[in-house]
Image (cartoon, rainbow, N blue to C red):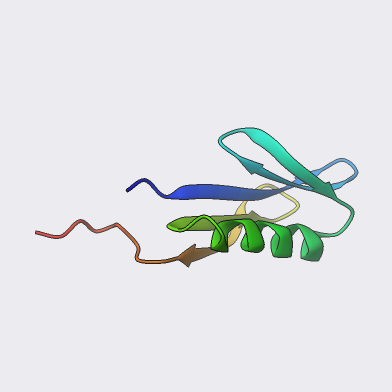
Length: 73
């Protein structure tokens, strides 16, 4: 099963939540954007939230349900 990946990224006016390059929501604060992404990810398992810093580098990630990597075998 393919894992859904939600990104929390900075914008000029705040923060955005995207999935597959599609904007899902915009927020003034990072905290609200992260909570929104987590809520969406928890409702669509297996999933992951990847949070970026203001400079675009990755800050943290949250994985929900079993991580499919590394593969069994």
